[in-house]
Image (cartoon, rainbow, N blue to C red):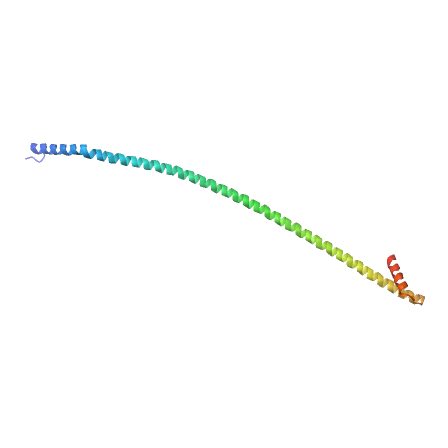
Length: 161
């Protein structure tokens, strides 16, 4: 018996066994395996399609998010610009109000000073008139007898000054 050449009986049974196993596999096994492979192929194709759609949706959502972010930044700039303008208007209004208030206070002080000046001038005129009458009495040597006449004379002298 040569180990490289098999016995013809053994070869027959091996071919017959192989044929039966092949027939059974071809009849029952291969269709199941092919069906499983086809199902797996379809599942992979569907998964790839779903992944592609998900990527497209993600890209769309990302673009929308970037657009929303850009819009939000634009709105933020508009709000800040509006706030700055409002701040400037408020500051300008406050400055104008302060200036008006200061002008009013200055005018009131000016009026008060003028009124005080006028009162002081009247007091000085009265004093001068009284002193003038006193001097005139001493110079003339007699006193005016009536205080009412003296008062009228003082008022006339004040009117001439």
